[in-house]
Structures are given as C-alpha cells and as structure tokens.
Amino acid sequence: MNKQPGTKGLIFNEPQLWDKSREGRCAISLPRADVEQAPMDPRFLGDAPDLPQLSELDVVRHYTRLSQWNFGVDSGMYPLGSCTMKYNPKTNEVQAARQGFAGAHPLVGDEFSQGALKLMYDLEQHLGEITGFPAVTLQPAAGAHGELTGMLMIHAYHAKKGKQRSKIIIPDTAHGTNPASASLCGYDSVNVKSGEKGILEPATVAALMDEDTAGIMITNPNTLGLFEENIKEICEIVHAKGGLVYGDGANMNAIMGVVKPGDLGIDVLHLNLHKTFSTPHGGGGPGSGPVGVVEGLIPFLPVPRIEKGLSTYKFVTDSPDTIGRMHTFYGHFGVMVKAYSYILSMGGEGLRKASQLAVLNANYIKESLRDVLNLAYDRPCMHECVFNDKLQKENHVTTMDMAKRLLDYGFHPPTVYFPLVVEAAFMVEPTETESKEDIDQFIDAVKAIAKEALENPEELKKAPLLTKVTRLDEVAAARKPCLRG
Ligand SMILES: *Cc1c(COP(=O)(O)O)cnc(C)c1O
Image (cartoon, rainbow, N blue to C red):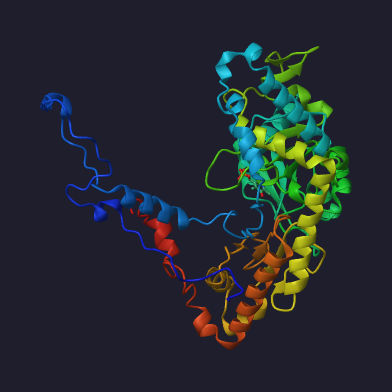
C-alpha cells in the first residue's frame, strides 16, 4: 500500500443542491391526512420559497461529501508554522459542552454564576503561574486583541506618568498583528533588524531606544522559531530608558513549563488559548487571548476583574486607572473551559512535556530535511523550523511548487513565504501531538519532492495533480472573489 496518506480513489464531486433538485422529490413522507384538506389563505403564504426538492439521501450525501472536503487536524498532520495547529483532546470539548457551562447565561449575575467565576478565577491563577505574572485578564478574544489590550495598558501607563511617548520598537521577525496593534494606539513602529543569528542584538536595540519610545514588542520564541537569547539584556536596555516590554506569547507552546516570560523581564504578555491551550485554531471560531501583567500594570487592567472573597467570587469594576472594557461580559467562556480542562488534565509536568516534545519534533524535522532543503538559520530551533527553496532555485522550483506538491502526497502544506525575513520561507511546525511515524511520512514526502525537483522539475511545477482542482489563480481569487459558488 502507498505509504503516504494521500490517495485519489473515492473522492466525490458534489454539485450544488439546486442541480440535484427534481420536481416533486421530497425528504419526508407524512401519513395520508385523515381530515379534509383545506387550502391556506394565500395572503399568509406569499410566494413559495425557492428551495431545492431533494430526497433525504440527497441531503445526507451532499453535506457528508462537503464535510469530507474539509481538512483539519482530525484528518491529518497540519504543519502550519506560526499557527500551532495541534490535536486537542476531545475531553476538553466535552467539558465545555456540559449543560452547566454551555447553558450559563452572563446576565444571571454573580450570585448564580459562582462556578463559572471560580473557573475563570482559577484559570487566571494557572495562566499567571505558567507565564510568571501576578495578574491576568481573560477578556481579549484573540491574540491580536490581547496585543491591543496590552498596548492600551502601556499607553495608559505612560499617560499616567505624565508624558506620552510616540514610538514602539518592533523586530523584523514580528507577526503582522504587532505593528497593527501599536498603530491602533497611535504609536509609530520602528523596525529593528534581527542579527545574523536570527535573533535581536542588544546593541541594535540600544541604538534605537530613547525616551520617546514607549517600549518594544518581542515575540519569544520569535517567528523564525528561535529563542531570543538576549531577551534579559534587551529588557534591561528598554527599562533603563523608562520603556516597557510587550511579549507576544502566541508561541507559548514551545516554552510552557520551561520558561516564564515574567521572569525574563517582560511586563505584559498575551497568550493564544486557541493555539496552545486546547481550542482548535482556524476556521474563524471564537478564540481567547488572555493578557498577563507585572505588578505595576495591574491598575490598568480591563474591567471587570474577578475578585475572590472568603468563599465567593464577584466581578468588580471599581478601578480608576483601568483602560475600560475590552469585551462584552468577560470574553469567550467556552474557550476558557477548554483551557482550564486542558491545564488540569495535563498538570505542570504534562505541559512541560508537551513543550519539550514540540521542540524535539521540530528539531527532528530540521535535522532530517537539512540535506534536501536549505535551512534559513542553521541553529537549534524551538517549536518550528524554517527552510527555503535555495537548493531548488537552479531548477526553477519554488517553495510554492513544493507546497502544492505536498497536497498530492496527502499533507497540508506548511506556512510559506512567512516570516518575511526569510526569502521564500517554508516554515514547518509539527507540534507535540504528531507521532514519529506520521512525522516520518511527512519527511519522506518532502524528500521525494526534493528528488522530483532535481529529476523532473517541469512535472513538479504542475502540481497539485491529485486534488479536486489543480493550481488556482490566487490573484484572481483575491481580487475577484466568487462568493456564490
Ligand atoms: C497567531 C499569532 C498572533 C495573532 O493571534 P490571533 O489570535 O490570530 O489574533 C500574534 N502573534 C503571533 C506570533 C502569532 O503566532
């Protein structure tokens, strides 16, 4: 049998339901009426809705087939770097769906929401423990929303000190959301280049840091999958000039249980519960981007905050320096339940192991593919590794060609052409949840593609050949979207 997961058989086409419609076909059969039929007053009926006429089986097959066109972590490896597309234990979904959680209504008030409040309070404590911060807010709905929350707090901090600053330093490896969040707060982004090793050099930061700079936004590990080894020194440089350090903690999957950002000198940090803490990432579902802060920023946290009394919990809004509310009620509760369940079921040791395995898996891929793909930075990586198409250039095969060909082998392609600091990046994040066998299949597929790039580049450039549609005009898809099918 083919060792790769990809195959061509039994992939169904599926037309629109209207094309399947046949006059008079119907999905239900009702018993013959035992009373005389009376026509309904047409004034109440209006025009009959234009619905396709289908049998039950037509409908079941239609939606089942469409669902099979989907690809997700439940169907296969999803090595999308920077995204942490990992498998999440289904028990966490079960807990979030429990009637008491799923049916909880925020308007019933604190008194009748004690369980939910306790869960959120405890989750804040756990995330504080994991990140090394004394206080956490769960309100933000996504990573970028967490960034905005953090930047608003930095803004409020400088305002309170009596002098607003105008700039924020942002490294060239940053996620695009970082400069966007800074500009939403009115700051100008100052780009700082990473050094030869793919990480920030203290001297470059020192040269830019001045008393008109509100702070720096650092992702650690950065988007090259490299640990910012000079982070402590950089934090000291920024602090010495009165600035604050924002940590983008979306990549916590690489370091939880191993390093606490709060211990490194970071002042405010967001997490992506929908990457690391058991909510599936992607598909546009609700997310959660909790933010942790050092002591000095606690007064600026959004309201309401959850306070624990002797035996009860309550929301408090009395906080004169708060940046205000960042979300209706208290954020996305279902995502919090999943994170809480994940953290409790994994335990501290389990979380550390998850990070260690994520890093091990990425380094295993890096070492296994180093002879066939050019490594952008030849150093130990964290949870993801970045290659590019330098070795294939001679045969005019690009990162995009190889990514498309992976589809034929039954793999979702990795992230391509990001981060921007690496030309034609091919960025792989296997996560901790893939087995060695599955990772080996992926490695074999990439090796086979690299071989094709040498021996048969023309054919490779036509890929994908086994998918429902072959190469699409991506520019036209973006410019002239066809939204009606
Ligand atoms: C995913 C990610 C973000 C943004 O998170 P969203 O929830 O998509 O807004 C920010 N920074 C980094 C490094 C990320 O990987």
